[in-house]
Length: 312
Ligand code: COA
Ligand code: ZN
Image (tube, rainbow, N blue to C red; front, side):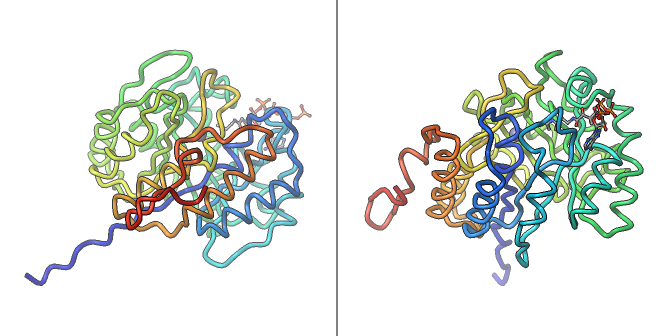
């Protein structure tokens, strides 16, 4: 046998500084956000969604996006995407020296109407010039399909509906589609269905990312299903923070520390250090004045050589 094993490598896309903080009512200083992002990069995370160039009225917590990016030291090999909803956001991102963006729509008109004041079709029309311009600038482009598993306003979402929106986004030139379980209602079978239908629609699995919330405890099971289906990019937020102000009941994102433990113990490479991720998680929990309630945040990691808990 000369076959070489395919690399067991996963990309972790950290959303703590953006998704994790956007809904926090405690005002967080720009300095603390910067320290947090630095700790995330120190932990070996290579994709860190830094902030949003959205309306400060919609998301007051991220109104300091310009100041944050002006002070953020960029590191080689680390991508710092920002959320952009429209051409105004694109212009702000360009002035801030960004080279990676994420646009965001959803699988239901009810959700996009609440979140960005547009129907899905209107959002696609708004993104077309944004993505075209970002492409000319050579930027990396991601698109979120939120509520891909279920919507807080209309209920269950058929996987084909989410995939149809994703396909239209791919046609607008994005490099990556991220299917979001915004309110944490998804289960593993749905993940497999989306992946397969997505591939059927011409969206290669290497272009598919998944964004799970652990609202009902299904996030890691969904990751496992994604891995089996060939997905290699997963979003998470250190400390399990986050939620969308327009998604009632959306509790925290899948915690990066829970994901890292799971991947390490399963033999997947990803480049992040669990101990350092836990440092970042403790830091941001301290800033928010909240206890760290994630599973691995509480239990620590585990050293199979000694049986001892680690990183506590
Ligand atoms: N950056 C800064 N300000 C912006 C902006 C941007 N990208 N886009 C619009 N604005 C400002 C406008 O100038 C206007 O300001 P004014 O009231 O002082 O005149 C105000 O926001 C409203 O703009 P309008 O074009 O009428 O849009 P809207 O009120 O329908 O809002 C969005 C549309 C998309 C800008 C807004 O809903 C938004 O930013 N949503 C983001 C939600 C989000 O981030 N959710 C979490 C991610 S899942
Ligand atoms: Zn999220």
